[in-house]
Image (tube, one colour):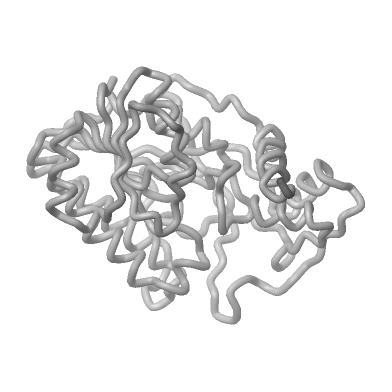
Length: 318
């Protein structure tokens, strides 16, 4: 296992959870984050954590930090559909330029690399479990909704190109709907905040869209277990939980855990006319389990209770 790991985007949801997982294993952690969506307060106060505020597009800085570590985890990305629709160029810049810089330095300095990709690259489906051999197909690039998927697809291609041409040891993990207490701009924290405020919980369209949620603690465990697995030629693996629920069911679960009297209201599709929603998202996790020997330890209700407790405390006057 790594003794010193660089985590880009380490102040975000998955990054901060992975920092804690690394510390539990006795590793030292170097975090690079520009704090555009992360928060330094999410990092544990520990002498074995060093935080550097900076950008993955800074070639010289990334090269120096990669040199100081024996493993690299590249999580940095602009997240949240709303943020991506509003600023698609920033998402692409990080996805293309930042990933090329990280992958190049990891290859030159012979550091194994984990690259965080996304289930967005699969586009929509008929509800079947999506395996890694499925062709990607997220939609027309003239729809900015797919900017994030386009950037991540290009990032995957860059990582595998460096693996093929320069022998980079690489793992690409496609995350499916990871959620946890400090998450923002996502459906779980929105529903929890709406319920704690007395409602209504606002469900877009009919609420029949399905998602498969994974607790961030389980996501961090998967990433940590995958780090030593980086093979020559690269490994592509879904990271998620094959337990789809509808968005309406998610709203009902949050309501029942907070206050059954809270109403659920249906609204038009999000982000206005012309936005392309993804109806179904469900991972095939056979490869993930085979590579890690791990099954998720936190149910969706466990995760929701943790999120509710966290956000209730955040909104309670001190």
